[in-house]
Image (cartoon, rainbow, N blue to C red; front, side, top):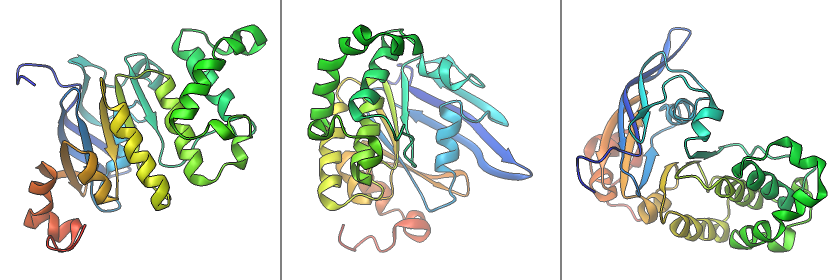
Length: 255
């Protein structure tokens, strides 16, 4: 990607304070379009706070946020979403009484400009049935499409959350610990899915599983105490002595 191209996502000296505590402290981040960019670091490093800033759920105390070169600092989550940004959450946020199919149909409806009014029409609801089924099949949920979300095990709830985010057709997809709490089989399926869906979009993810980061990330930013400690490719970052000390452990260990 040419250096002159605007990053898909950029922050400039971004800060966020909470009652005198600076959770994000002068973060400069550049995420190149079409890449998978991982944010890693120990607990309390500021990763989720940074995600909340990028998606408008928190307003910065200082600094700027740009999406595809446009300043979106302080904009609401809804306005940022309309710029092609979708986000999954570290803690699943689903309507427990709705089915996976209904979740995805709702997201597809919103993506076409329809709002909550579409719930008043069974005809409009059915319009998205085929596409919803295909998307659920893609994330391994076709056989659970009509079960209440409350009945899904944790890994399948995360898969549904990803399907909902994809249904919004984002250019930029932010994933907050997409494999957290998953068994090995679900992790492998999720890694494979992210590898597929990255085509044609930018993915930014917070992830503790370093094997997942190694498999997916083009670039890795390590945060510590709300600041950028190191940034680079996975192997470069993994063997940096500062990272070894702060987070990753023995660089010669397996994994």
